[in-house]
Length: 266
Image: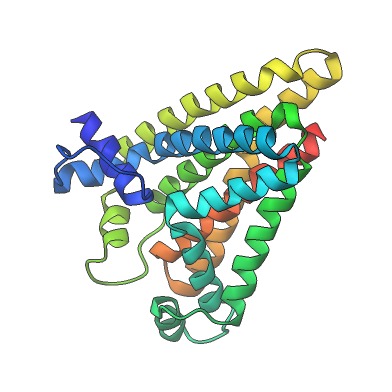
């Protein structure tokens, strides 16, 4: 049952193949939200592998970072970046609530969405390139897990803005205190793995150890603050959150964690 929930979470968040025996079940699908941070950990490990291979093949963090950003888009199907662009188009349109929701539902991308998506991709590439080689793997492992943890909390703490039976709405309305606890447990495990990977290159001096401790504390705080700020802003204008806002939160919190990493371990 737990394996089914994990694979359903993988199926929803990524384009990765899942075992053929995994059958859809409404109750398991709703419970799968709690496994989002674990999926983030799997994604982070895959990004770290892509980065390592890229550095071996090309010998420069700029190219390997480009490969990582490309893999983020490929593996997730640009799910979260699409949500970011739709959210920017809606919230920055300065229209009434219903018109903003209609703009966000439109599959076409406007100027604000294109700018927001481009800026996010550029920020991810620049921040990844700025990360020193010894710490890249640990940061890449942890950032996706924290961002998916923030998404679960956004689902659980704010109402869904639309009426109807969209997939994101069904998931958002199904998040319970138990779901939040499960997600937080997986996020803690993923963060412990990330910090363990990060500890090896950063425990050679007192200054490096201080950087590790600062990142360990500030990165989750940055993810939490970014998610809360974006969720409050969107809810104030839309009366709640949408699936697009969930995607925007995932991208924004991931960028925030990368920024903290660069600030702490540069």
